[in-house]
Length: 58
Image (cartoon, rainbow, N blue to C red; front, top):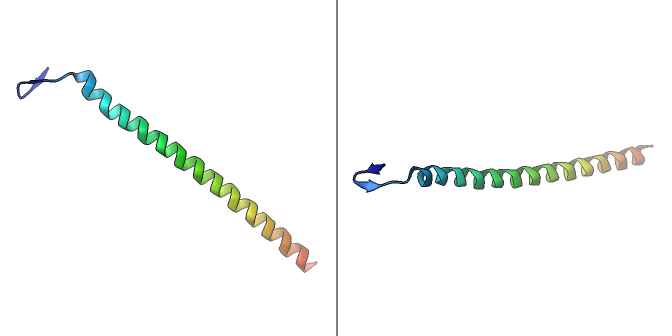
């Protein structure tokens, strides 16, 4: 296939977006893992605060 007289390999054209999507997907996975870790840490802190408040009130 050619575009404006320049030969174009469709497999190469189609693989570029795929690589970009795979890279972005990997970045999203890392961000989601970080978010989950942050959530777990916040949850632990909240539980500790709640426990310390209960201990101080009784």
